[in-house]
Image 1 (cartoon, rainbow, N blue to C red):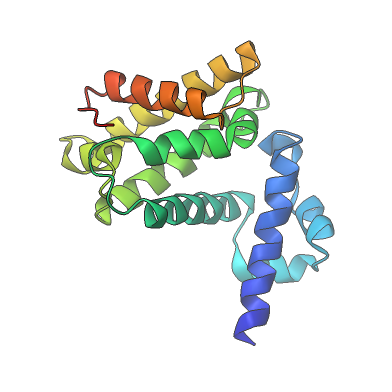
Image 2 (cartoon, rainbow, N blue to C red):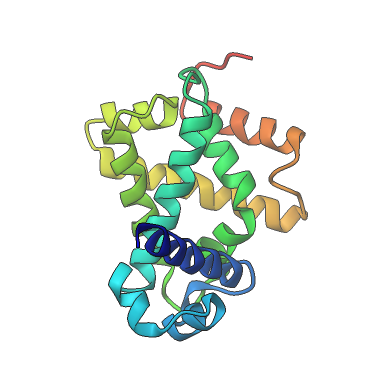
Length: 184
């Protein structure tokens, strides 16, 4: 039974990723997510309260996986740079091209995930900075604002956020923006 629930959750998350690669959050419905995942709508609500709850779980899982892969990077901003590079198209649909009004809610979901991960003790310097800030929620908004700006730049220049030289540029930009010490 446990493997079925994990598989169902992963199917729903995969469906949401696929939809977010094509359209903005406002254009996605729970019905579309369920149809893509081949899951009944009632099953969706066993796991998530709405599509933003699903988004939050997806963001948390993505960042936690990246942090696990980079447990020792306390000197840079590699996790956030990889998050942007790996999810450029999705972030574009969440934060940049979404003109229907869900940008604010999407950004709040991402900010809340960042704060949760920062408070959990993540060692990436961006998360350490959030954790130590006198206003962690404001710092999370600054980080997501920087992410939005970077994604806009990638989109307008037609750049691949996952390319190694672009990843290095993103990491350097984040480090400069947040006055982080860089180590290569």
